[in-house]
Length: 277
Image (cartoon, rainbow, N blue to C red):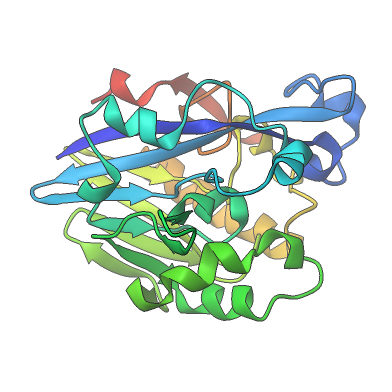
């Protein structure tokens, strides 16, 4: 098995939205904002190469939206998903599986692209897409709070290629997933067994190391109290099992471990994934 972090660019979101009830005077010390109160975030995906399988976890915002759309989110940086995959001699057609943590546009926008006839088609034509059944129902009949994050052009073209998940399960021998419902209904969090370690792709369960304190919950989360309980449960499991946490959105830190202290669970070490592979 081989693991490849792949960057699909960076984007900006309002710091207040990303840190919820935490005052800016506190959170900006850990995750600085620009003059417009915007914080820069990564779109960091992960490829698992295991035998004949090349499994991609999430795929960023994609490139098919118009200039106005990208103007809201300040897509920046030199990385694209295509260029990042090419560094590992991987093309879109090589991908056999796409695991989507959830269907917000910054996690699944790269699933769909325009073809030569200006039709929206799956970008990974040889892949099956793993999505939770709960999230699919949530996304195709969206609530008003999340409606702007669920874009039908990201979702409907992959409908016939989806493998639905409705509970914690093993997808492949070294890849399992668990469902969490605080951020959005049916978010999938992948757990990867690699040698003697477990690497957890954090999605939006924990967007960054700055979100480790329990009350630091995004305003985007539909059920923040459930997020808080999910974090408490996951943190205990992560410390007990020395999990490696792999961050999708933390632009400063790719991975970390956690530790118990007298004041609760805290950040232990930060590092890049290739340092432990």
